[in-house]
Length: 426
Image: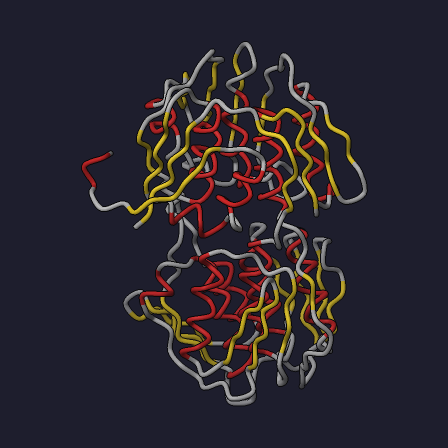
C-alpha cells in the first residue's frame, strides 16, 4: 500500500507529455488475442491496469514484453482459460476479454467486472449484443459464461438501447471474426472506438463507420498483426493536466494532445476565462487571472466527459460565485466530495447536482482516493492547498495516470510516494 504526500501552494511551470489513452489500451490489449501473429503497441502508458492485463494474458500462455513504451504481445501459443479470478475483479476493463475470448475461441468464462465503484455498470447491452450474434449467455454465481453455437457466431443487426462504450467495444471484438455482416446501431462514438477499429483494420478486419453511431463489420476468418500500432493520447489525462495548469500553473505546456478530442472540455475552460494557446499537438496554458463560474453537464462523446467532471472540480473553486455540475452518465460519482470538504471546500450535492462555491484557501488533510478520477481531483486540490495533503488508496490514481509523480515533479510540484501501513491516518 502506498500514499501520496503533496506539499501544496507551489506555482508550477514547464511541460508535461501525455501518455497513451488508458481507455484505448485496456481494449487494445485484450483485442491482441484475436491475432494469429505477434502484435506490437507503441505509446503504452505505465499504469497498473496494463500490468494487470499482462498478468491475465500470462495466465493464458500469451507472452508479453514491455520495453519503454512498447508492448509486444505474442498470442500464438494461447490457451483457453476461464478468468473468474482476483485480477478480473480488480479491473473493470477486463470485461473486454468477454468479446475477445468469444471472438477467438467461441466461448468465454469471465468474472463480473470490478474496478471503480461509481454506480451501476450493467452489462445487459453487452449480453444483448452477444446473443444477437448467436451466443448463449448465462450467469453462474457472478461468473459470466458465454458460448457460441457449433457453427460459430454469425453477423447481426444490433441496436443498443443506450450508448455504451463497453458494449460497443465488446461487440466489435466478438464480431470481427464472425460469419457475415454485423451492424451496430446507436454505437458509442468515442475516439477510443476509432483507435480500436484502426488497430483491428490494420490486422485485416473490415470495420467501417467507427466514430459514427452506425458501425458496419464484415467478418473475416483471420487477423494478423503487421505494423506497430501507436495508441492515441489520453484525453482524460490531458484534461487533468490542463486543469492543474489553469489552477496552479505559471505557464505549462501540455504535449502529445489531440485537441479535437477535448472540444467540449476546452470550451468550458475558455468560458471560465482560462487563457490557452492551442497548437497542432500541444496546448500552452497561461497563468490564470480571475475565473468565471460555469455550469457543466456531462454527456456521451462528443459531450463533456464524465471522467473529467472530478478533475475540473477544484479549478471551479477558484471562480467567484456558484458553479454547477450535473453528471448524466454517473450521477453517483460523488465520492470526492466529503474528501474535498475535509480540505475546506464549499461543495455539496442536491438532487444529483454538484454545487461548488468559491473558497479563498484549501488546507492540507488526509484524504482517500476511492476511485481513479476522484484521486485526480484530490491531487489537484492538494497542489492548490496550503500545507501537506496525504492521499491514501493512491493505487487508484496509479491505475489510470501514467508516471504521475514523475510528471508532476518535472513541472515543480513537491510530490512524493511513501509506504502506507495503517488505516488510522484517515
